[in-house]
Structures are given as C-alpha cells and as structure tokens.
Length: 520
Image (cartoon, rainbow, N blue to C red; front, side, top):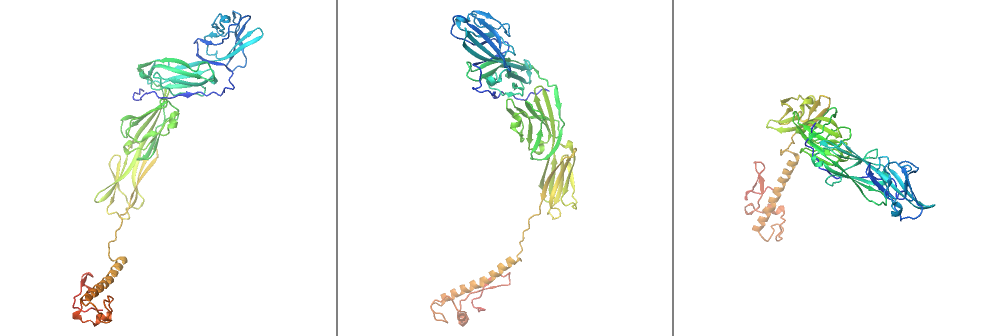
C-alpha cells in the first residue's frame, strides 16, 4: 500500500549509554574506537632506549581473564608469536631509535579487548600501557538505496560498552536523531517514511569514557534513496473490526494494534459513505504529528505513543461517526485495526402545538433498531422516522402531567451493544394571580382600616387651621390632639372636618361631603 501524505521532517533525539564502570575501576590508559577492517594504531611510546630492549604486546579479549602474547620484539628485531592478524606489526620498524612502539593492524569484529604494551630493559620493567580497543559495528537495513516510504534502520553495536559514555547519530543536516537501546545492548536509530530529502551522510559520534587521549570518534555512512520505487509492506495483519456506539461529544476510545510500532496513520471513513480521509499521523522517532481534521481527536497518551503503543481519544459530533482505521507500521510490517462508531444525539424543537423530540444517529449500517420510550410504560408513545437516521416523537402542548417526564432514545447495535440518550420534559411553572388568597385579603383589610385614620387626622388639621388659638373643650392653645368629645360639641355647619368613606364601587374611597356629619 502506498502512503503519500505522511510528512517526514527530522527531529531531535539522542541516546546516552551509561556503563557501570567508574574511574576507580578503570583498568586502561586509553580507549580507541574503530570499525571492522579500518586500520588502527594502538599508541605506545617512550624515550629512545639503548642496550637490550624487550617489547611485548599482550591481548586480553572481552570477557576473558587471561592475557596472551600477540607480538614481541628484541632490539630491532620483530618476532610474531601469536599475532591474530597477518598484517599486525609495529608501526615504526626503527622503534628502538624513535621510541615509538605502537601496534598497527586492521581488526576483525572479534579483535576487541585490552592490549598491553610492556617494555623491559634487562630485568627492569620500564613501562606498561593498556589500551582498550572497541570495535564499532553498524548494520544498515534495508541496504541502500532506500525505497520511498521505507524505514531506514541504523543498528549500532560496540564491543566494549563500559568504555563508551554516549553514542549519537546525526542526520545529513546535522540534527541529532532519536535512538533507543535494544535488549541486546545495541543502539538503534530509525528514519521512517524515507524520502529523497533524507538521503546523505549520516554521522555516528562516540564519546569514550575516562581520561583518554581522544575525546570523540566520528564515523560517516552514506545513505541514498530511490524515489522511483515505493516500499512494499507485504507483511500485513488485520485485526477484528470493533463496533461501538456513543453519545455525541462523549469520550470515546479508538484502539490501535496491541504491538509497538514506529509510526501510526489514522484514516476516517465518513458515516454511511465510502469516502475516506487521512486524519492523523504520528512518528515517534521524529516525534512529529499531523492532524488533518477539526474534530477533537488526540493521542490518548503521549508517553505511550513515544514508546510505540498507539491509541486515540475522540469526542465525536453526530457527523463524526463512521469507521476509524488505524495503521501501525513497524519496519516492514503493518498492523491494521478498525473501529466502527455510531454516534447518537437527541434534541427538541418547539412548535405552537407540540414539542417535537428528535433522535438522530450515524453509521446506520451496524444499527439493529432505534426506539423512543417514556418512563411511564402505561403512556402510549408514538414515533415516526421521516428519514434514515432520524426518529421523532411529539409531546402535545400544553404539557400535561401524564406526558411529562423522561423520554429515552435507545440505539441497539447488531453486536448487542446499546447506547441511550434521554430528554426530560417538565411541566410549565404555575403562576397564581388571584386576589382571594389570605395574604392578599389581609393586606387589603389593613389598608381599609388605615385610610380612614389618615383622613381623620387630615380633617382635624384643616379644622384647626380655620379656628386657631383655643380648644373648644379644654381651652388649651394649639392642641393638635383633638378629643372626640370636642368634635361632638362642634356645630355641623361650622365644621371643616373631612373624611373618606367607601363607596359601592369596588371599595374605592371618596371624600365625605363637608356638611355631612361625622359618624364617630
């Protein structure tokens, strides 16, 4: 299957190798890192020596406890005793004059280990220097040129991991690349979805451990691309399609294959349609992602995704049902998992005569039945389906107690899974506007008693204004607190007393005639 939409920028990623050896345990004077068949010189030098000189090069392979002699020399005569390579020799034939006792050879993968330069003059030991030789092995897979959309794997092994503090790969653009350690101890770095922009010189940098003569070793590998051909993934595994249903905007899990992968592609087949679009991609080696949809779709766990375990979380709208196809790529293999999703949604629309309840659902192909129910089973509920994927029922207005309550739309899939959405219909609030309630009547009664008292006070004030100075009964001046007896002694024709009395028209009060006697 050819995949063209996945982006391939190269992102930062570096791995450190932490050996268990400490400076106190270090039993070497120098570290040399080289590749198989790449000429190497193990240094050993001293002042030019006179007289009888014995030089011995000893070798202790990785994992061994004993030393073996590989080369010896006496004065200017070189003698091979147990040399592991035919080309093994001293770097300088005139070693006694120059003081250069270095060893030169082209190592094999098995030639790593500790090499000891031991110089004696007579019975006196002049010097012993130990060099730890580490052999670097890099496997490039598949062999270049890398086909378009293929996955480049760079697997790095060092024969003495305790002598190396860090291994890092850099892209042709000089960007550090992500690496991981395999159970075997090898370091692997991958470039998925290889393209023409990814070809060039890849550099492996190795930092040795301890106080050594050389702080960094660089090795370059040229990787080319063949963009005229696309990589083929013949090892394809299909998982069983998962069928599920959920409410609109509720959280839904979209699983992928249960195996670890290099990158993942997620496709979406629209509900009840054959249209399919790529919606999400993630490359854990580049730690780059592409989202090509506005839906609330995300990786469930970034930590799990970085380790190669992919799954997605979705909060779908009604229109985002359908089939989600997850493809997980690991080297030359593909694992495909599909999830078929039906989304359920209910809502209401009001008309002058009724409240219309709608139930809508998507991805109808896996739906067995959809029904409306009322919590009161004795209530006869009717519904209709005016179009595929839509179901409606009506609640007549005004809402009666027997039709109020919870209306539930139930969707059942062919595999038996069920999703339910509920809509609550409530009675309208009651408003009591009657004046016959006890509180209102008591308020009006209090008002009826208060108004005549106010009118009496106003009438007294107006009368005293017309007869200033003396109270008719008490003789006191300006007594505004009149005695009822004084009012009865006052002739009617001279009174300016005013009062209000109720009429027959809904208890509305009117002003009393000034010549009408007060009833008090």
